[in-house]
Image (cartoon, rainbow, N blue to C red):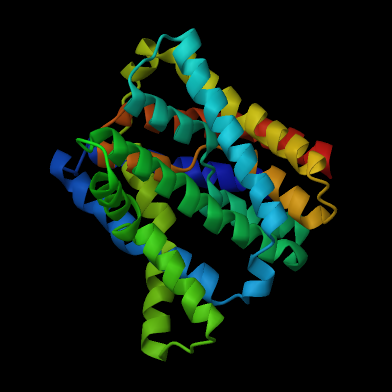
Length: 309
């Protein structure tokens, strides 16, 4: 019941954005809101998540490597499917498609669902996977997109790509500094900690509002089958590959196994839409992928939870 209420709340926030765009918001209003999410709200959320935990509870190399292998395998499946079945040849589009098929709604659905099902014992695993997912998937997407747009080859060009995709990325930097603060047990001033506590919760509602504002259902008629393929990849193939790879890796900790598969089974997260807007690649299709996968998750996530638990 809690899972259904969470999904319905997501739809309400998306619906408010859809209505707002068609009533009181001007087209140019969305860009500043997306900028706020990317540069301020998401970094506050990630920094808050990591600095409050000990490093011992965050880093389990084998488990995190298994998670990354599952992400890469799923991303390749999504991209190859789009290339083979739908004759997509644009590399930037394939990169965004891969992100659509692998990036989960970690923040809003992942945290309450995993915590509600598994309790505090799985908290460290959940936060570790969410942090790695944000850094690797979003950072990896930025790196690949910048590499497509960078002219020339060589060390200088590689460093330029690295600079644009990671060293200037608020998502990477906030996680990195959060790890440093945690490692050295630095106590933040109360004013700064309170500011972050106020800023972080804005991530999900603002991102979903912007997603709803950008929805255009006429896009569904143009690429309906391809979007359904991405939904299947996200809700079925991604968790299935995660389960298989964790089993093959010999993961014995059930909290890590269950947290990883449940997080992989979640619908596409709104931050994928933020990336599509940032690079101006398949923005409308990405917003629809988020909505369609969220709708289908009412059934699919319930099935996965019943199977696993």
